[in-house]
Every structure is written in C-alpha cells, then in structure tokens.
Amino acid sequence: VTGKRPEVVLQERIWSRLGAEADAFIALDPSGAAVASGGFNCRLRDLARFGEMIRLQGKYNGQQIVPAAVVADIRQGGSPEAFVSAGYQTLPGWSYRKQWWISHDDHGAFMARGIHGQAIYIDPKAEMVIARFASHPLAGNMHFDPTSLPAYRAIADLLLSQHRWGRTRCMAITVGMYAVFTGLSGLAQNWEMFALFRFLTGLGIGGEFAAG
Image (cartoon, rainbow, N blue to C red; front, side, top):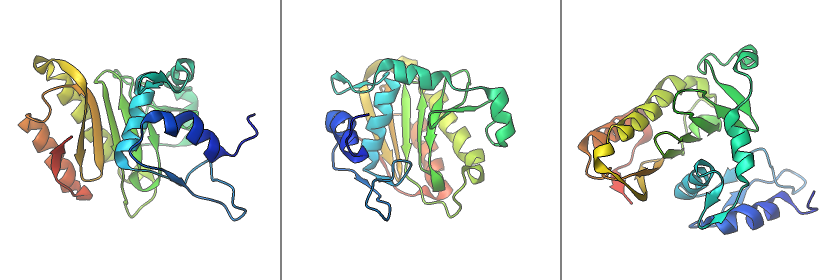
C-alpha cells in the first residue's frame, strides 16, 4: 500500500508518535526483511504505552495515532461460537480478531498474546493496561493462562474497588517484568495492591515494587 518497508511504516506512523523512551528492534528473516508477525523488541514501559494508546481508542501523546474505528473493530471481536472449534480450552467465551484476543467478559477485556508469556492485557472498565515480559520455559499460553488471566482480572477488580481514591492522570507501576498503566490514583499507597504484586512476583516473575 505504502511501498515502504514494514519497519519504516511502524517508525513513521506509530513509534515516533508514541513518545517511546527508546528505540525498538525487529527481527529479520534470512533475506533481510522485517518479520511482521513477530520478533518485535522494545522496553517494557513502551509496550505499555502502546497498550494505553489502544485503550484510548488509538489516541495518545496528544494525537490520534491509530484510527478509532480500527480499535473499535478489534474490540468487537470475532465469533465466540466459531472460536470454540479452535480448541483453546483456557479461553472459553473468547474470540480472535486481527491478532488480538477478545474476552467478551463484563469488563470488555482484550489482549495481545505472545509466546512464553509475553502479553498486553487491556481492561477498559478498570482503565487498566498490563504489559508483561516473560520467559516461561513453555511457549504456549495454555500453560500459564490458569494463573495469569485470573491475576490480571484480580488487579482490575481491585482497581475498581478503589474509587474512593478518585481519578487522576495515568500512572505506571513496574514490578519485575510487569508494567501497569491505570487512570486510577492512590495505587502506590495501597498495601492491598502491594500484596497482590508480591503474589505475582511469587509466581517466578521476580523484581521489586516501585511506583513510577
């Protein structure tokens, strides 16, 4: 469509406009062409920024980066009935659309899923984005979905329970290989949340609690 290499389009249309902290890298195939279906490497908080941009209907850093109609199309998902035949037993009621996985739950949660536990989890109702780097020894998400998905939902539910703190600008929290962006304030002072993140680190993710 553009006549440009994928990495050039990514740089011009998304990365340079996102306000990323650092350059990103993309894997090349034997011919030297960018691998558009995977092999993308960036900093954790920049991955969370990308997720936050998607949560905000494609708008971030004071500009519309991805058309809102594109995000809306992703969020509507595919057919949960047709998805059943794919055999993803850890994702009942979910669907797949344009490389995103849609939960169809009461929070409207959806996510990008990579191998070995890499993920962007977006919960619109909780105004939350979780970006996760991981190196689980097994590649398939079915090996850790029973732990990861309830943990993501638990964080979202806890955030929603903290309305007494009010709302403020987006803040980021990093714990080991997790980054969480949320529009809810008071998180850094919430010892319940601290305990939950300690639980996450107990799953083998490692790292310390720090508010950014």
